[in-house]
Amino acid sequence: MPDNLTVLGVWAHPDDESYGPAGTFRKLADEGVRTAVLVATRGQLGGIADPSIATPASLPEVREAELRDAAAILGIGDVAVLNYQDGQLMDTDVLELRGEVVRVIRAIKPDVVVTFGPAGVYGHPDHVQIRRVVTEAFTAAGNADNYPEHMEQGLAPYSPSKLYYLAVPEHVAGRISESGIIADHDSDITTTVDVRPYVETKLRAIRAHRSQTDFPRELEENSAELLSMEYFKRVLPQPETGEQMEHDLLTGLR
Ligand SMILES: [Zn+2]
Image 1 (tube, rainbow, N blue to C red):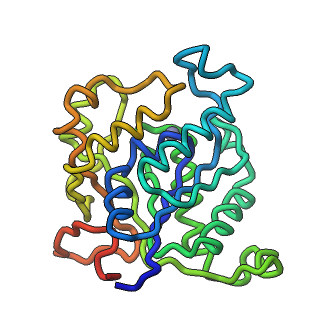
Image 2 (tube, rainbow, N blue to C red):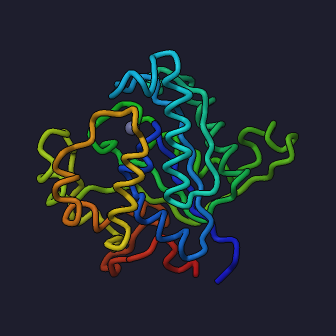
Image 3 (cartoon, protein in one colour):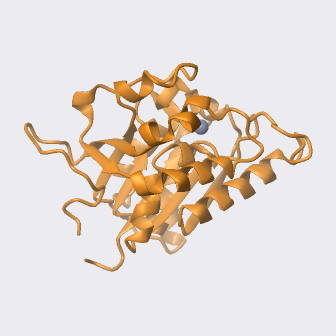
């Protein structure tokens, strides 16, 4: 396979990468694929599980450190964090935020980009906004007319090959009662990745976010059932009618 395949995940908060496709990212890393994560905020609005871990003042720094710990557990080599405020991505300058995502795409040159789906898993406005901005950035990054200042900074236009949205199928969403998860239609899922060997690793990555309190009990108690498969919707290139289910984000690229 080409030796420089790269997969980039773009999320809103530290811990999205661990609740999201953590098993897939660890599996890709184990296969020699370069993986990277971009997070738009430091999760400043998160609760604090234990006052000895963080104060409101130290929380941004603590959550970034937890993100880096989780990334190390998942074999994610590149971690980029933007300076946006947790909970305010809907109110931020969209062109500027998109430019930041374009800049990271041009710098990291991922073959595949992964982000939230339109529902943002449970409708979190930051997640919904990241999905929108990443979808626009995916296409914008390839055109030198967009954010020309990047070229002056030594970057070049770059077009990733594939864009995926994280998906939660109905049978999984239905098992996590308190989270308000908005399920994707099973027929929209194009890609399933078997991550059974990585369930414990995924739980360790989630637990690396030590300052956070909201770990759904059902995930821990039914981890083998709920975390052993990860689901995606390929957005670009668009799926063809009757296309077979993929089992790898790099299908067709390696
Ligand atoms: Zn989040």
